[in-house]
Each structure stands twice: as structure tokens, then as C-alpha cells.
Image (cartoon, rainbow, N blue to C red):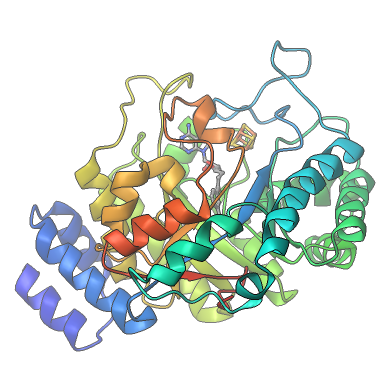
Length: 388
Ligand code: V47
Ligand code: SF4
């Protein structure tokens, strides 16, 4: 299929086939691909680019899986292995949030206003510094700990909810949910229902990696299969829990595997409509045991963002995760189909263990500035993409 025909199909709203996706990956015309992806992104979300004030916390890096691409995980007893207890998790979160409350209270009225910002407005510049701290969402993921019980995780959610009732808890990859179901003896649905009752509000998209069996067995032989990952997500959506979806690229997979991965997500989304955002994750090879792997190129990063926007026509959002892409490629990705930069993050450990040199956190001002300089409209969102 020629790029011209694919372009015509995109402009007339026709769904792309796997062959179209492959042709796009094999094309060198990134400007056309980017322009088309930007067109689709604008049809879905106008000129808006979303971000959230969030905090990441990884309760433990001890993990029984030890995926070969993961530089974050350790085995029990290893140097650098850590475990946070519930009190420490709550204390850390409260301390960070408290900072925000103090700052926000000085400019209460601007902090309470819906924060849809016009690009380059003076008033935005004036209020922004007061809103750098504090966050509305906590993102919790960690290793599969050999000794922790399912009750420990329920208590963790309960304690966070009790001390910060307005905080949105986005937690646990599908891989962790499957593990909780195994250690608790509960069905997937009952596991998810218990977590929801304890305070879980949505789930991140990690653990998807690449669904292709052969590649998956090479990069993470102990991890649940791609079809199990999809099953967990389908169950979560049925339980009323919205999730994201990811794809780890730039290791041993090829373009065909990336397209297969996207098609499986698109098929599930057709059935459930439970995915909010798709996040392509650029592989970082340092300190991993994937032999011969390199960092991804900027061109590959932008193509992958753009093609995911074009293939995943039923996903509302495509996220350019600035931590993995770096601030500059993430900014350009906003012209290549991405409409979300994730957030302030604070304390990213997974990518930084694998050699990422980007910052560990970004302030609200910095995110707003990146988005404005890309000619887009920054929209601070909640965890369900409502503005404000
Ligand atoms: O599942 C692990 C990936 C994921 C490496 O849903 C690596 O909003 C690159 O899923 N190089 C966890 N990637 C992070 C994740 C995520 C991040 C931000 C937002 C959301 C969301 C989800 O990180 C893992 C794995 O795929 N990962 N090691 C590495 N060396
Ligand atoms: Fe464990 Fe997740 Fe790292 Fe795999 S990617 S070793 S499951 S923490």
C-alpha cells in the first residue's frame, strides 16, 4: 500500500490494516507520518495537551520475575534491594503533598480555578509557580515480592486512602494483579474488586512489554503471557477500572511485532473501551541483560508515537512519557500525535536504573512551557482526563 493511499484512508476515517501499519514503519517519510498523526490527534483532542500532577512510588524493587530488560529489580538479599513499609509510604506521600498545600494556600483562588490554560498568557506565568508541588494522583508499581501477602497491599491502599481521601490511587500493573490473584487464591475479578474496595481507582499500563511469544520468552521468560495480560485488563475493564496500555520497544522485537501488539490492544479496546491512553516505552539498555541492545533513535521514537496514534483509532489518548523519551523528543512528539506528557512524576526509579539521564521530576511550569513552546494548549487534567 502506498503512503498516498494510506493518507487518503486516514483522511476519510478508514481504519488502518496491519499491512498499512507495517508500510508506515518501513517508510522514511516521517514528516508525512507525523502530519497525519497530528491531524488525527487534533480531531480527537483539539490542540490540547494534557498533563497531571502525580507522584510515583515503588514500594519494593524485590521481584521474583527478574525480567532481562529490567534494571530496577533485585532479588531478596541483593545489595540495593529495598522494601518500604506502609507508614513510610504514607509519610513520603503526605510530606510531598503538604508542601503543595502550603504553596497553594497563598493563591487559593487561582489554585481552585479549572486550570485550562491559554498558550503564552501572562496570567499563566504568574500563577504557575504556586502550583508546582502537591499532586492529585499517586502511581504505585513495584516488584513481585516473594513474601508480601495480598492483605499487605490492601492495607497499603487503605492507609493511603484514609490519610489522603482526595488522592487518586492509580496502581499495579496487570502482572502484579495476576500475582495477587495467585498469592490470594482469589479469581482475577475478586482480586480486582477487593483492590477497588480498598481504594484502587485506575491502573497503569505496564507489564505489556511485547505480546509476541518468541520475543517475550527471550526478554522476560518468567512474566505472564501477552494473552494473560490482556485477560487481566479485560477483567479490570469489566470491573469498572480504567487502565492504560504500554508497549516496550527497541529491544529484540521488529516492526511486525509492534503492529501485532497494537492490533491486539485495538481489538480489546473495541470490546471494552476501558483503555484511556497508550504509552510506547522506549527501551533503555544500561544495566540490563539484553545483549547487543542499543538506545532507541529519535526517529524511531517519533515514528512509534505517530504510528500508534494512527493504528489505535479507538484509544482516546497517546502519551509521550517524557521520562523515557527525554524532554526534547517528548516535546516534538506533541506534533507527532501525542496529546499527553504524563506528569510531574517525582521519584522515577525504573528508567533511571537503566541509564536514563532525564530529570527525576518536572515542575508544573516546566511542563506548561514545553507544551506552549510546541504551539499546543496545556491542560492540567485529573486521572480521567477531566480538566482542572
Ligand atoms: O512494565 C522496565 C518498563 C514499565 C525498562 O500507565 C522499561 O500511565 C524501558 O508502565 N527501559 C513500567 N522501559 C512503567 C510503566 C508506565 C510508566 C509511565 C506511565 C504509565 C501509565 C506506565 O517500564 C514496565 C516495563 O515495560 N521498563 N525496564 C527499561 N530498561
Ligand atoms: Fe519485576 Fe516488573 Fe522488573 Fe519484570 S519489569 S523484573 S515484573 S519489576
